[in-house]
Length: 256
View 1: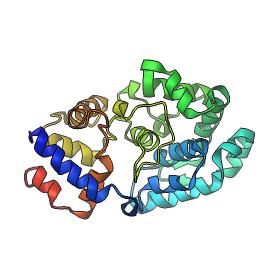
View 2: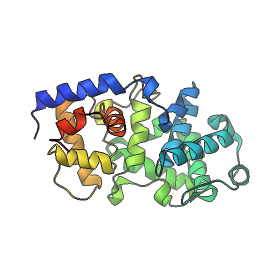
View 3: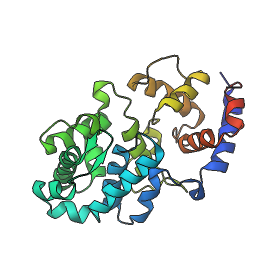
């Protein structure tokens, strides 16, 4: 395993180079900068994160399409009926996610907003139940399981997209816009995709072959030893540096 001091220095260097607003496009977090209202931002962020799988260009098109249909999300949902939502999302598709999949999610969000006033308050009301309890609240309000659209760590899922959503909402820097004030960045977990899983294994953070919830916990704990108050601080910078082929990352991983 790379020594902690060496690792922190290398990761801070990547953070300084890549964790910048001018490096964001075409990452879907860029869509959230248009929403000044935190209620709009958290709804838009949830929709964008739910669609954050597949090819980058396809994600960008699908998120743009979904958010254009929503307009100002909080205002739209406050007065929408299920029939309204079915009409608004008629014909929408992102890979295997259709408008028919998004409507129950949005209806569940509407129910949670009616009860708690915001997705953040609903999350905090879950106490130690955290993300699993929050997903359960949305599913109960939706009146149906939300499956692949909104997975739960209770089922062992790595919940990469939801942990990405939480990163966007809780952290506040040049990349992550924030908006949630009651959740500590220290509580966040790594959005574990295939690339972060590989990085975690090469750094000795985990030996697990499966990218599941247990692996998320192991990788996050290792990053927490490097950055105790912000364990996902380096997530965007690592993804961007890998995308552009920065030589620091292969060197850090032992010539990978």
